[in-house]
Amino acid sequence: MNALRTALRRALLATLPLLAALPAGTASAAAPAARPNVLWLTSEDNGPFLGCYGDPHAQTPHLDRLAAEGVRYRRAFANAPVCSSARTTLITGMYPPSIGAQHHRSRVPLPAGFRLYPELLRAAGYYCTNNAKTDYNVTLDRKPWDENGARAHYRNRTAGQPFFAVFNHTSSHESQVAPPAGKTTFRVAPERVTLPPYHPDTPEIRRDWANYHDQITVMDGEVGALLAELAREGLAEDTIVFYYSDHAGGLPRGKRNIHDSGTRVPLIVRFPAKWAHLAPGATGSWVEQPVSFVDLTATLLELCGVPVPANYEGRPFLGPRAVAREEVFLFRGRMDERHDVVRAVRDRDHRYVRNYSPHRPWGQPYSYPFQVLPSMRSWHAAFLAGKCDPVQAAYWRPKPPEEFYAVADDPHEVRNLAGRPEVAAQQGALAARLRAHLIATRDTGFIPEGMARRLAGSGDLISYARGPAYPIERVVDLADLAAAREPRHLAALQAALADPHPVIRYWGAQGCLILGPRAAPAREALRARLRDDWADVRVAAAEALGHLGELDPALAALGEVIKSGEAGEVLAALNALDFLWLEGRAPLARVQAMVRGLELAEPADRIPRHLLAATDAQRPPAP
Image (cartoon, rainbow, N blue to C red; front, side, top):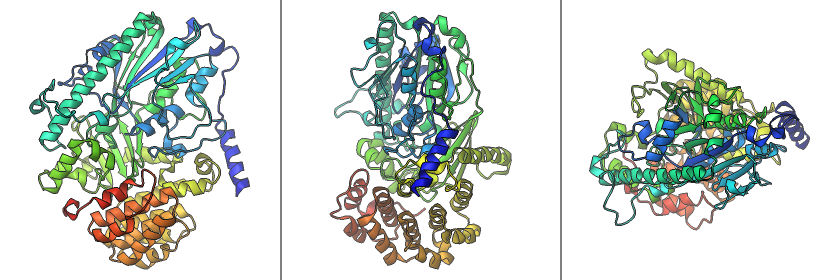
């Protein structure tokens, strides 16, 4: 097995060459004046709530001025709606599901020799600084930046050396959404705030929105200060400036959600006169083509004259070798303590979503936003009290297997057109593109997190996933059947439960869980999987059996995994246990007895704390 892993890793590195330095005579040998500086100004957790993007509540004069001096991208997207996964896309130049790094705050090893983009820039002679957030989902055995931290600054470079610098702002982060205690004055009064249709009209939601607009104004001022500093340093005419946010909205159904409210970001690029030939349009103009973070890294390298490594999956959207994409691909995996598998494709006017965990709601009971957001608590309370209309209640209900939105006519994406005859051709075309993307990138998100570490062994998951041992086409096709929630697929799911490959068995069990009581004919096959060699298969089979009334063997199997499983397996078992209670399959007292006294590391420890503080009144009402 070790020899196979070594061969796979060598094959991967042979087929995906990693360019560690520039060829002689290219950008590294050029005079500093021949290359632009690049400044990335980033903010957190905000969509395009800016004046230059037409937001009526915005007061963002500095970013509005930057847009007037540069170009705005109307359709820019973070590939994932959470910070660490989005930043991992940037730092690696790859889709995190390609390398197993899609899960929030995971630590995934990279293949030997993998070069991150700051290392490529530094090899080309750039001084690279990051002030100050990293938050990558990969383990690093070296420091990719010349400077990283609160004091990191381009001023510290050698005289005449070109620089690349990142300055990140947290003033619009989810943790800053709630107004501080005692705040009574808002720039936009809460009663004047325009609410999206998916939010119920509660005082807490209005106050959070009002304060959020204030915080975006604060962020705008911070960006303005850095732009003024660049001008004072006499560097504005030598520097290409990018502004973007790490993903979209800080309020509920923004962050963690695959829709525009979670993934669409502002992106402004300003080119000084000497680099104006690289701009995609005149100053003040809009760029209509879709772009995403996986391409932003390649674009940076292109602008700096650094070859894009062959293994990078992004393509530049600016510069001499710019590539125009027709769509972008989006993903989400585990975020905080809650699992989910969502994949999506977004073109200029439509979004197609495949929910591979349709038995889970969009609004899972995440500890962190419930702790810091009065709007989240208020929305959930309104739902439990039956005060939400169907659009607002949908956030707390199980998801549809597929979503299709005509975004131009439905900007809040509340009218799911999936399955309607009039959109069948468009939906089918986007679904086919998404499937092709999942297979081409060898998407590892279909491998449960605990199972992934064991399959990778002592190596890295990318080496495993690029080899013949990962049957990606079979996995994607079976996951599609499992997520469809159609009893006609039960025979295929039962057959999968006996397959030699653990990922296939997992999706067989997962499909039975998604079917719920309609999976009753698979009862015996599911019982057999309670003795499976792989804990993630046992967990899925146990939860499925819990929905078939076999609570005792289900809880016994989950209890064994919780006591002796690996971290990812334990977290999966705790999620299954929690949802068995939330869905009325397991008594709260019995569930609480199973988690009382557990000592677990984050994020797994959050679920026992949530359960021990829970009451049956917090269970959602039946649809």
